[in-house]
Length: 200
Image (cartoon, rainbow, N blue to C red; front, side, top):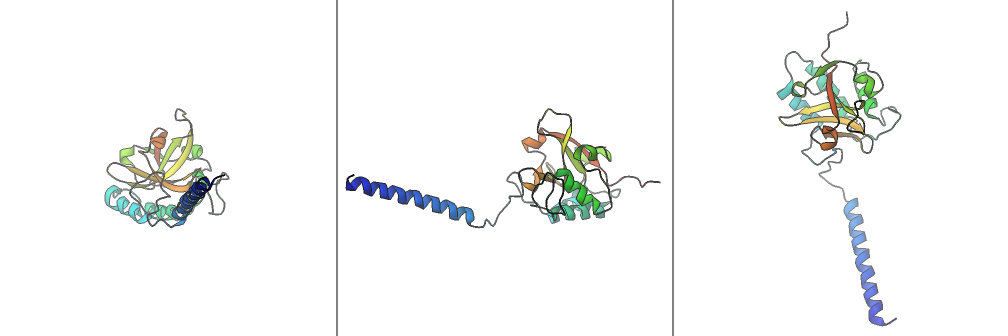
């Protein structure tokens, strides 16, 4: 091999090495605006933000707002916890219904273990009347299915958006919005299980 060819080969490897190292360092450097617990880039909402919207925009005198606030605080405490198919493991990981079951159990509200059976509970609520703390249900991975396969807890409502916290199979406990195409196509119903008449 001639020398010019070897030199060009050497510089080419140096360039490749530089880009590989740059990519590694960029990935390793902490992102101060991390929104990885959201399923799509958007304005970051925290538990405090959700409670603000709940108390200022959505609650009425007929709703149990203190309980709803407490439920949101509890749900957001599990943000970024990983997904596990077993439902729930001592608060360390959850599937969608396991998260809902765990959060509501903390407030002595007993729910069935699966999303399809949880959907039987409570009263149907129109999206325009939904409140933070209500449960939002979706079908499974097939958008044309009529069977409930996923559940989340509504965490905030703005003029044009419904946010909900849930456990996704790929990213664990995150916040998503109803306007995201995946969820918009699979939306089934919203249920209120908080403001129910006390049992006699």
